[in-house]
Image (cartoon, rainbow, N blue to C red):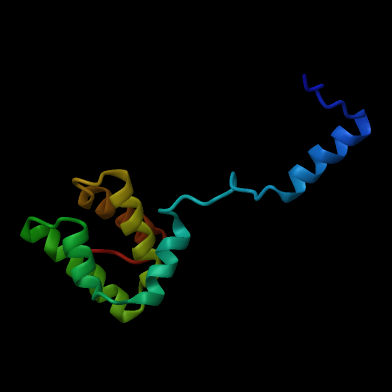
Length: 120
Protein backbone atom coordinates (compact mmCIF):
# COMPACT_ATOMS: atom_id res chain seq x y z
CA UNK A 1 0.00 0.00 0.00
CA UNK A 2 1.26 3.47 -0.90
CA UNK A 3 1.90 5.99 1.80
CA UNK A 4 0.60 9.52 1.27
CA UNK A 5 3.28 12.08 0.53
CA UNK A 6 4.07 14.36 3.41
CA UNK A 7 5.58 17.74 2.80
CA UNK A 8 6.73 20.31 5.28
CA UNK A 9 5.00 23.65 5.59
CA UNK A 10 7.95 25.33 3.86
CA UNK A 11 7.68 22.94 0.87
CA UNK A 12 3.92 23.57 0.50
CA UNK A 13 4.49 27.32 0.67
CA UNK A 14 7.13 27.08 -2.06
CA UNK A 15 4.86 24.98 -4.27
CA UNK A 16 1.94 27.37 -3.87
CA UNK A 17 4.08 30.45 -4.54
CA UNK A 18 5.57 28.84 -7.63
CA UNK A 19 2.09 27.97 -8.86
CA UNK A 20 0.93 31.55 -8.40
CA UNK A 21 3.94 32.92 -10.25
CA UNK A 22 3.59 30.52 -13.16
CA UNK A 23 -0.20 30.76 -13.58
CA UNK A 24 -1.18 33.32 -16.24
CA UNK A 25 -3.47 36.11 -15.16
CA UNK A 26 -6.76 35.76 -17.03
CA UNK A 27 -9.10 37.53 -14.65
CA UNK A 28 -8.17 40.95 -15.95
CA UNK A 29 -9.07 40.39 -19.60
CA UNK A 30 -10.99 43.21 -21.26
CA UNK A 31 -14.54 42.98 -22.45
CA UNK A 32 -14.53 42.10 -26.16
CA UNK A 33 -16.77 45.09 -26.96
CA UNK A 34 -15.02 47.91 -25.19
CA UNK A 35 -13.73 51.35 -26.07
CA UNK A 36 -10.43 49.88 -27.21
CA UNK A 37 -12.21 47.85 -29.86
CA UNK A 38 -13.95 50.97 -31.08
CA UNK A 39 -10.64 52.78 -31.22
CA UNK A 40 -9.10 49.90 -33.15
CA UNK A 41 -11.97 50.02 -35.65
CA UNK A 42 -10.74 53.47 -36.66
CA UNK A 43 -7.44 52.06 -37.87
CA UNK A 44 -9.12 49.46 -40.08
CA UNK A 45 -11.55 51.73 -41.98
CA UNK A 46 -12.46 48.88 -44.28
CA UNK A 47 -16.05 50.09 -44.53
CA UNK A 48 -17.32 53.56 -45.30
CA UNK A 49 -18.71 55.26 -42.20
CA UNK A 50 -22.10 55.81 -43.84
CA UNK A 51 -22.45 52.10 -44.63
CA UNK A 52 -21.21 51.10 -41.18
CA UNK A 53 -23.82 53.24 -39.46
CA UNK A 54 -26.66 52.48 -41.88
CA UNK A 55 -26.35 48.71 -41.77
CA UNK A 56 -24.88 48.33 -38.29
CA UNK A 57 -27.56 50.47 -36.64
CA UNK A 58 -30.37 48.95 -38.72
CA UNK A 59 -31.54 52.27 -40.12
CA UNK A 60 -35.13 51.85 -41.36
CA UNK A 61 -36.62 55.32 -41.80
CA UNK A 62 -35.67 58.39 -43.84
CA UNK A 63 -35.33 60.48 -40.66
CA UNK A 64 -32.80 58.01 -39.30
CA UNK A 65 -30.84 58.05 -42.56
CA UNK A 66 -30.84 61.87 -42.46
CA UNK A 67 -29.29 61.76 -38.98
CA UNK A 68 -26.64 59.27 -40.15
CA UNK A 69 -25.84 61.58 -43.07
CA UNK A 70 -25.41 64.50 -40.65
CA UNK A 71 -23.06 62.45 -38.47
CA UNK A 72 -20.99 61.45 -41.51
CA UNK A 73 -20.83 65.08 -42.68
CA UNK A 74 -19.66 66.25 -39.25
CA UNK A 75 -16.96 63.56 -39.17
CA UNK A 76 -15.83 64.58 -42.68
CA UNK A 77 -15.71 68.24 -41.59
CA UNK A 78 -13.69 67.38 -38.51
CA UNK A 79 -16.37 68.52 -36.05
CA UNK A 80 -16.68 65.00 -34.62
CA UNK A 81 -14.02 62.31 -34.45
CA UNK A 82 -14.59 58.98 -36.10
CA UNK A 83 -13.29 57.23 -33.00
CA UNK A 84 -16.01 58.87 -30.87
CA UNK A 85 -18.64 57.78 -33.40
CA UNK A 86 -17.20 54.26 -33.30
CA UNK A 87 -17.34 54.21 -29.50
CA UNK A 88 -21.01 55.20 -29.50
CA UNK A 89 -21.71 52.77 -32.37
CA UNK A 90 -20.23 49.81 -30.47
CA UNK A 91 -21.98 50.82 -27.25
CA UNK A 92 -25.39 51.14 -28.93
CA UNK A 93 -25.05 47.76 -30.63
CA UNK A 94 -24.05 46.17 -27.34
CA UNK A 95 -26.85 47.92 -25.45
CA UNK A 96 -29.68 46.79 -27.74
CA UNK A 97 -28.53 44.61 -30.66
CA UNK A 98 -31.92 44.38 -32.39
CA UNK A 99 -32.71 48.14 -32.32
CA UNK A 100 -29.49 50.10 -31.65
CA UNK A 101 -30.32 53.30 -33.55
CA UNK A 102 -32.35 55.14 -30.85
CA UNK A 103 -29.53 54.61 -28.35
CA UNK A 104 -26.93 55.76 -30.87
CA UNK A 105 -28.88 58.90 -31.73
CA UNK A 106 -29.54 59.90 -28.12
CA UNK A 107 -25.92 59.49 -27.02
CA UNK A 108 -24.50 61.13 -30.16
CA UNK A 109 -26.70 64.19 -29.64
CA UNK A 110 -25.67 64.39 -25.99
CA UNK A 111 -21.93 64.04 -26.63
CA UNK A 112 -22.01 66.37 -29.63
CA UNK A 113 -23.83 69.01 -27.58
CA UNK A 114 -21.15 68.79 -24.88
CA UNK A 115 -18.57 69.46 -27.61
CA UNK A 116 -20.50 72.41 -29.04
CA UNK A 117 -21.77 70.59 -32.13
CA UNK A 118 -25.47 70.64 -32.93
CA UNK A 119 -27.65 68.57 -35.24
CA UNK A 120 -30.66 69.84 -37.17
